[in-house]
Length: 336
Image 1 (cartoon, rainbow, N blue to C red):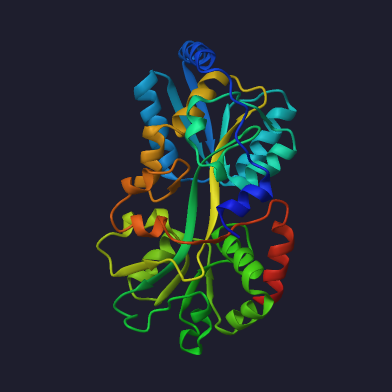
Image 2 (cartoon, rainbow, N blue to C red):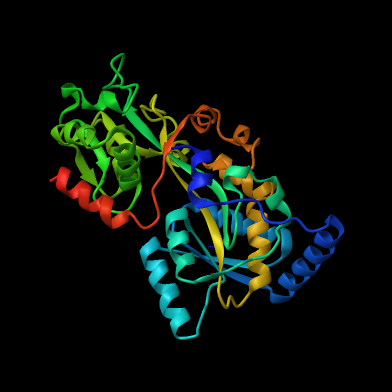
């Protein structure tokens, strides 16, 4: 089968949905689950490629007996696929799972429909409570990783430390000039520290890559001392290798992740069940064990021991919907 969180709330206007009586919610939800089982299947487009989406899908299938398939792809590819399907009246998937900026942009284009009241939504922290079609399930954190054989007592403690000349030519980084983790880091730090910081970083001659799994292993092999921005959800897969990840003093850039039900979804009730399952105990536990900060407080403790303190780290900022073109242009001017 295949800024801070509180400022994020203000920026996006996400608030808790209106509450209906508990008895009505219960009766209505039982009807949704029954209808979902009758539909019998669900296709989810996964624009993140994170394995956790497939794991949640598998657990939902075990729980409800609904066949759940997941199609992985780049967010841009998934977005175009949805556009073509809807323009031809042939919508195939019922859900799209991606980062908030992508989902917000698609929401503005009228791609999604509101899933209605979800029982587990009441447990979500207010900063990630969803209004409208986007249901946020977790936050992905981007931090700093280094090789413990090459970096000892002089390990950077802050993002500003990376401008020290001793790190020139020794930083492997996700490309700041394109969509992805590198651009999330770029916009967050540009907003926080300004252009002067990045002009100093450009003098460090960071080596750019778009293959983050390989980049992490290149640092583990000792090809480079430092890698950034490092996705916390990758930490467990590197267990036993000579690497360490830290949340710099200023905080971690982050991306909220979630899903939304597509307009004209062929299996709308199964989609609603998935969204509710995402916010439930199983979904939130899986997200924590995979290194994501869950949308429901208290599940951080379910993460691997080495990841728990990282999920509790300070948050720096995230991307602004609609600003990608501007920030990649600025990054391209600075990092030639």
